[in-house]
Amino acid sequence: MKLENERYEVTFVEKGGEIYSFTDKQTGLQYMWQGDNDNWGGKNPSLFPIIGNTYTKDYQIDGKTYAMKNHGLIRYATLHCKKDDSKEVIMELDSSEETLAQYPFPFHYEIAYTLKDNKLTITYHITNTGEKEMPFTFGLHPGFNCPLCEGEKFEEYTLSFTNEEHMQQLVFDLDKKHPYELKDVVIKDMPCSYEEIENFATLIYKDARSAYLTLKGPKGHGATISIAGYPYVAIWTAKKGAPFICLEPWYGHADFSEVKEDFYHREGTMLLSPGKTFTTAYTIEVF
Image (cartoon, rainbow, N blue to C red; front, top):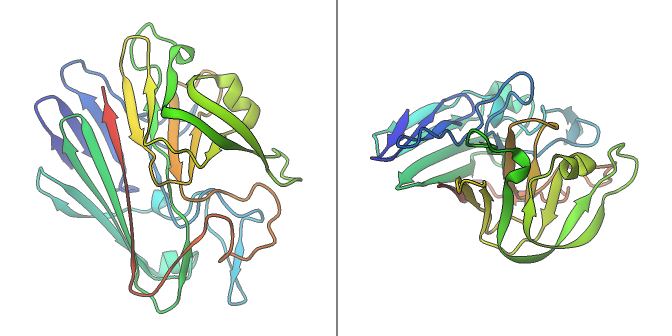
């Protein structure tokens, strides 16, 4: 599956419905992290119906216990290609016995890709095909090569919000013994820093007002993702020296300590009525 124009080529795989590559044919730059065994085997998974996991790694619905792997179902599933006509790629997944054993809610999931110039638009449609309210949350996890160009360093890259942000950072206890705290921060531009990410495990910000977050290197290349409408944005890399960074718009988050609320009422959980469809989107623009 491929979308292409004179300058850019984007390819996709049915495993997770993911972007496989985003290439500038003129410069040869590969923008998307390709995954490896030494740093992180993932690439750009979609997180549904959970981000991270619950505190106990399982949960109860109607008196029965269920469990999912980290970040839910889609990243581990093989989607079906519904459309691939050079203008749009659409992949889909319907709930099955396998998904219902982990998450007892029938659903139909679609991910659609379109490419215009240097901008890839990714649109999601999630439909509750069952007869009960469906609790879920949703997030994105795209990984970008960083650095992009030979001779550059990770630390020479900058992350920039559209506007100066007065927001809150979720600071969580790595031992998960205490609830997370909210720290007031003011950020417009910030250097990519292995140490900063390592100190907090993941940088998670709440209620950013900017429309975009941009990653840019010293030679002027990088990527911009849209974050408007997403209550949280996370920044992560695997470890010091890992040559990638993830910029992640989220609707919710994992449990960072013991949570008293049930699965329907965890922070960031949305409820979708039977027959209704949740739609969201974001863009990746490379330069």
